[in-house]
Image (cartoon, rainbow over the protein chains, first blue to last red):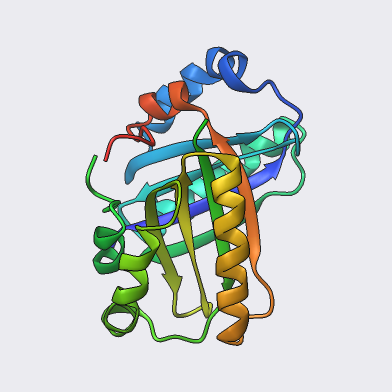
Length: 103
Length: 103
């Protein structure tokens, strides 16, 4: 069953178009991770936070990615990563206009 | 600018199809909230947690919904709600196959 991975962490930037320019190579590489389906990139310049909402094919691939990404963030100076893995309730999400597999 | 609202909280169920049956009326009502675009329903029966990833038209509508939903959860016995509001980095999300407005 597909798993939703929710990640956020303290981040001092870059944000917005500058972040997009700096991280587009990373974004392409993330699409090649085992089990990857999609990611929404999240950022809050005022609160100095960033993160991502991901869908992976399985719990194992979500966990493996989380370990890899946490290590990568640590190299970038991010010590504390908040992460949770969830199932998606597809019946309710269909009603609220966002099936996880739509795109 | 659209805002992503990330919510999670301790939850003892129901989960899965039983949750979908119990909450489908709520799901329909959520689609009628001011500024609502979409919601993905999240749940983790093993960790006893649930939540949602939402997109709203503006920060104001996301905040107003968060206040309403937090009050509703409190009535259901949920005392502690974790919530964060983010911008979506659309350029990076496009690369990783999930534009927030696709659906």
